[in-house]
Image (tube, rainbow, N blue to C red; front, side):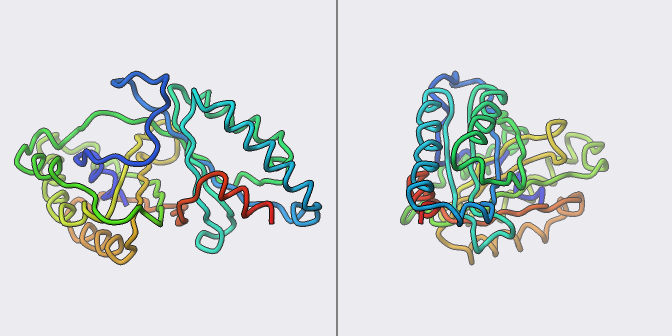
Length: 255
């Protein structure tokens, strides 16, 4: 599903969770995604024990607020073997690692299984500057409507054949790829992280939308362009969830 990642190279509309305040405006943002499943042992705890465990985790998140932007999503019922996804953004990957390590020691964290984690970094635009006519349309597009309800996180990978194309060949393919995405910028937000060498994927794309039908149609449109022939990985996992504040996630867990 590398199709998505290159949409992000050309789209300037980033969303939800600005980089932590300590990150310089032109510095790369280090993003880490962690997918958790709650162990059955959590259900055996008393209401007071659950509340205390959630409070410990919440206090930890609060203690990192000046260094880490923290976003959370409820995935139970929509993504197999999981309850929630968190996205951490900071100036260094080791800060994200520190938070996750300390989370494991909280009353909640001792009952969590880390099912999947992946990290990447933000970078400048690779292809959009080569087609300024489309870039102008991308800049002008604005997300409309109510706040997003759904999140989709997709790690993707390109083939070796793609990386060995000339820059001119890749620009032409990405231009073709970009055209059908413009119609969906009003209903689908997205952000790209580069992961080559950092994970078993080249890109991580995270989307927010209120309209899963539009998202599905965007995917279908992008599967029909030539650039899709160079995609060798889609998801593994693809994570679908709903946007929730950490307090909302904690309340669900404390029930």
